[in-house]
Image 1 (cartoon, rainbow, N blue to C red):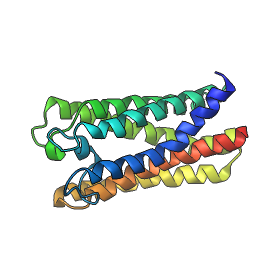
Image 2 (image 1 turned 90 degrees about the vertical axis):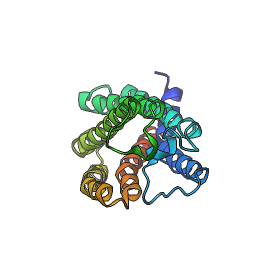
Image 3 (image 1 turned 45 degrees about the horizontal axis):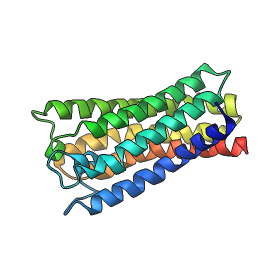
Image 4 (image 1 turned 60 degrees about the vertical axis):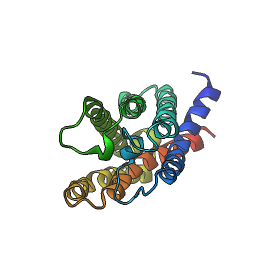
Length: 208
């Protein structure tokens, strides 16, 4: 892959967390009464939601492109480490799953009882998104010192991995009480996508 293309691939990874933040804020502002604290991000694209059509166009689909481009650039960067390349493949798969989560909408409210086929596929895409980015992140707890020589990035990867995992019980509790799910989901996904942005920044600085 051309070095210039790889560089822009890294920029795509750097843009991903910024794009998510801006996209979710914009979509939320177009949804009357939407609560970032209590409602899932998926509800922005839910069937029947006022932002059903626009949310995937400004969130899932462009983010999918950014992840795929960044993952391909990372794959082309690491020639000697199979685990590093595996992490890159997982990031690409995360991007593909982002398209799936955008194309297959959840039901209004994204309730877990009697979900439609579309929501089932949406949930499956969401699960793939969670697992691929979590594993890609966790791999660099081991790889950061060995491949990049950066102990701080190993610790940062550990903190992000634990952050994504530790908030899961809180998400489950929030579903039961009907409050706080949006906040915990944003923390869960936010730390993972922040890791992508920092990883991209590391690769940009090394190439510079």
